[in-house]
Amino acid sequence: MPRFLVTVNRPIIPTFILVSRPEEEEGKRRLMRVEESRCLVNCNFVRVLKEKSEKEKTRRKEREEAALNDRKEESDMV
Image (spheres, rainbow, N blue to C red):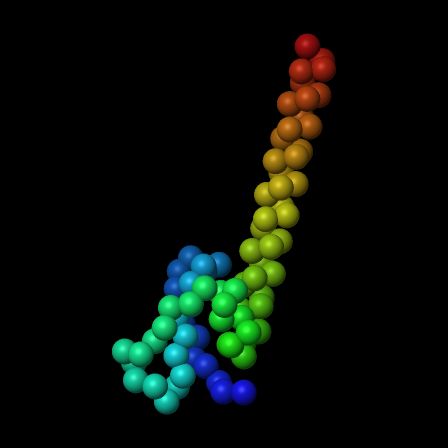
């Protein structure tokens, strides 16, 4: 499997990453979505980023549900 150079753009959990083969010229980098490149890039870093974003989604959902439950409890008291 060919090795790829991965340059990650900010923010820390990127939607896009720059992928280029080391033997290619600088100008031939290709912008790819993380989901597309996950199978191409032999790099745990991309997998870790994906897991982080999924954890963040579940945390956000839990926070929203907790806030909703708090509102329900407040309305029940009144």
